[in-house]
Length: 207
Image (tube, rainbow, N blue to C red; front, side, top):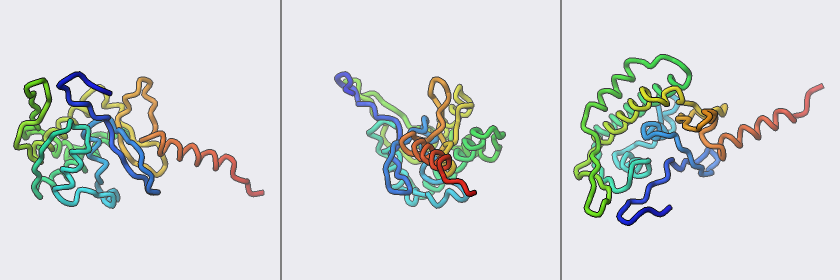
């Protein structure tokens, strides 16, 4: 889609993930904070960890729904705090998806990150959007944490979902008009689950 002169083209929301079978698919969790939860998670989800060094967080930011042009500097300590924030948002979203109370310890992590100054957007001559120089991992995490606060206190707080597939735990916000989204992506888990149900219904029965 083309924009008006001087505008930066809008990025299509969502991330390209790769299934266990090596097939790429598009997943849009609906918010910036839930995009971060695709990088790993607490407990058993640590096996999916991709934030191993500061450059990995920079790469995630470049692929996220944030507008292009962000020049980010991330320290080792900020990377550790990114994983801590990611895990807290993951657990808060899972609790919200399953109707459980939000736990104070996880809220404290989000609130602490949100208290720092966020990323600062700028407008350049000609109406072009850019980012203020000197962006750090701390600014990025404050932006992510504030997005999480907006999610968990906003109109879509009751629309946080976990993928309905039996072996997928991706979290997303159901922004569809009817509020009936079940899958992380129809092309991935939706089709897999339909095939699984079909096979189970047509499996030969034991006499």
